[in-house]
Length: 286
Picture 1: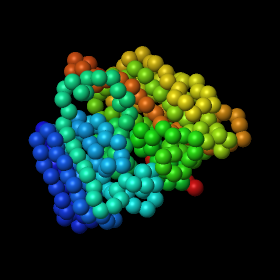
Picture 2: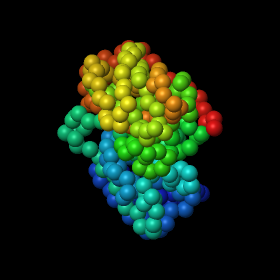
Picture 3: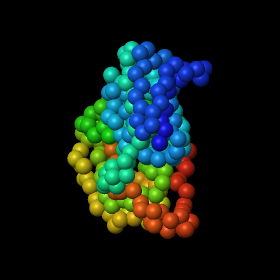
């Protein structure tokens, strides 16, 4: 796999780039400016390890297409990231392809710290029909960014998916290809007593099945084994809030554990009609 990393400015001019076969590194010796973008290009769709900033954990992700672009965050959009991320006048980026033995292991398939609203290429990808006040610290992407600290809220590392007090809120996690999942874990935001919690949530899978999960008032991981199944997306919905004084339940993290689907399983899935992921309109009410 051929890889390229680029820093591109608001006018599309390439400020720095690097290329490599199987692996490449880029050291950018300038401060980012508003409008700059980090671009990853690969010769064919597939799995890659990306480390696009020294303050954010490297991550194994799946690129469904050959080019991914991340707008360098400024202002409110910077708040979900470490205060050290994207700052300073020297930045080290890297990308490498994966070996077959690296992607067969069971892992959390819902982990992507590089996700954002504009992303349609790099998976997993999270989106929701509601995000509290449209603020970045309550965006859907926060539920898959790997940040699990949950005894506060509203700033890094206490990022979360906020539902704007909407009982019809729903979060969809898309994988970009068929995967085989066997466990789901929820980390509720636990800034009690400011926060409330959900006593029950439902998850609908792309295979058409729906499962309900009972939850308790806790900031610890609440993990549930499920019957292994091949899916391309899951939707979290049916959020039943506890009867307490706080109107603010929220989700810090969702983990979806499993493996890549085998070729035979993928072929069998493709032979069936697969429902498209839900496409609720995003609501940003105050």
